[in-house]
Length: 301
Image (tube, rainbow, N blue to C red):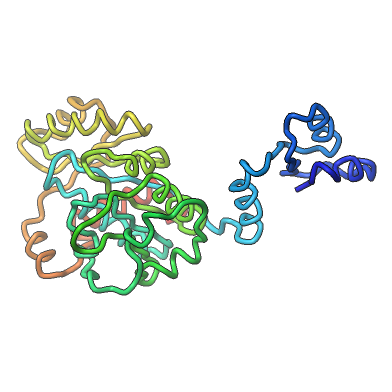
């Protein structure tokens, strides 16, 4: 950081080229500003006070550099009851069991809570209601310390009772922290895309759309897909077994195929008992998660 008032004095010393030099000024309209910028080898000019947030972020990056390169995967249901939340939880659990630092984000205010699927509804730690007013940078170490964390899995869900919509700014702060400090961020999306969901989709490397293989399921998924494509790039279909063949489902939706999930008759009963989703190599859910994570994260798994 070079103050505009010190730029000429610094340039006179003949400093070697450096990466990420920024000229900070309160007089951006001064015609001499850009000459000073070139003289000190700055890559950008930052105006105060409007650029205060970036200034804070630049210093914070030095104090707390990114330790991971967290990739974001979003999961959405083509219709209610398709199993998107179960898949999101299963992906996060599978990744954490492989030793990957994982952040699971519940972005569906009306979904009933991902903490229930993990059997952790009584766990101590912050929920969305504690973060909805948050803007700007969040330290990923502070975020992990505040949220319920179990080994390598950290979870952000909702309190019971009346819930507030998640502001886009709060979602942005959480996902930016997740990208700096976690290997994987899994976001469970609502079917109706609000501003927070749009923020998550914009950051997603891949979005998985869970589609039930029947006519009504495909038609409903097509409507959800249209909204997803407004905010993200790659969308891939996870097909729940039904009366239609997998290739018919993906051809109808014109999306790449991520895999299929045959029905597990005992899964619903297990979840209602508070058991975790069965993710062993003998279960279709476990095999799908392992295969997807291997292709998504590559050598990291």
